[in-house]
Amino acid sequence: MIEFRNVHASYDENTPILRGVDLTIQDGEFVAFVGTNGAGKSTAMRLINGLLKPDSGEVLIDGVPTTRLKTSALARRVGFLFQSPDRQICCSTVREELLFGFKATDRLDGEAERRVDEVIERFDFKADADPFLLNRGTRQLLALASIVVLEPPVVVLDEPTTGLDFRECVKVMDIISRLHQEGATVVMVCHDMEVVADFAERVIVMSSGKVVDAGPTFSVLRHPRVLEEADLVPPQIVDLSLALPLMMPSLAGTPVAAANTLSEMQMAIEALIMEGVK
Ligand SMILES: Nc1ncnc2c1ncn2[C@@H]1O[C@H](COP(=O)(O)OP(=O)(O)OP(=O)(O)O)[C@@H](O)[C@H]1O
Ligand SMILES: [Mg+2]
Image 1 (cartoon, helix red, strand yellow):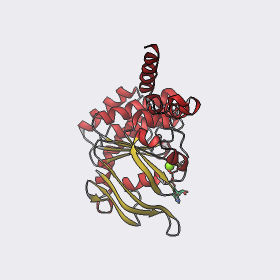
Image 2 (cartoon, protein in one colour):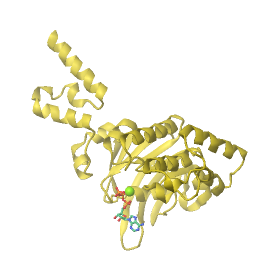
Image 3 (cartoon, rainbow, N blue to C red):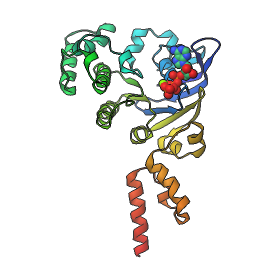
Image 4 (cartoon, rainbow, N blue to C red):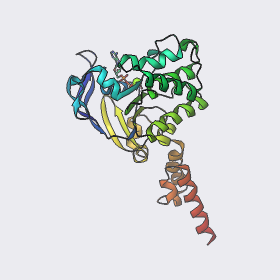
């Protein structure tokens, strides 16, 4: 479990960034952090992996404050994908890159080598390739693979799909989704509300260093005040279900106006057609 208790944080004393954040993330959840640029999302992620410590308040991982956890213990528990993969990649071959996390946490053994080779095959990487010569999407996949290979119980992903094309985005989200299905807690910062709607179970909305809303994905993404405050564009299907009743008032209060997913919208429209036929 991850808990923030009245967390205040900053990079220098004169500029408060997080201003009293309280939140809880349960084991096995898939949670998305959303909000405008500069809201403090990446700062919150850095507090989870212990790169940044709170000025006051506490960040607890399984009940233990990050201030009392060693970096290596935190690194075993929390896999972290930076907002830019280039901040993450440091080795001269793909294989070394994938082994790096095991070396850093003192776990380099035969089992580690076996897991690395398995991941190279699964991701269809070339073991001797130079990571810096790979294209942006493959570098992002490598950064993600270097977390996957360590099998951490918690993964924190700062904008994992930004800058990727549609196919790369699908690939990356498939991997993240599989991690979640295998039991990992997934905490993801994401600006793409379609991705958030497709994958996250719960959304935490940040604005100006505070949590302004949190709840099940669709109840948050249907909330006009929250959408406006955090400058969010809801996923198209929610947008449509909010807009349709305005254009056709007879749809207000029908399941069409409450649809959160494409299949819910289809079912609601089919039901209306059937009613019309009767
Ligand atoms: N290393 C740093 N040193 C000083 N200030 C920083 C640093 N990193 C972020 N900030 C400032 O902290 C505030 C919050 O930044 P943060 O990166 O947490 O926002 P964000 O919600 O992740 O934004 P984005 O969506 O643009 O990634 C911003 O005003 C930013 O300028
Ligand atoms: Mg950020």
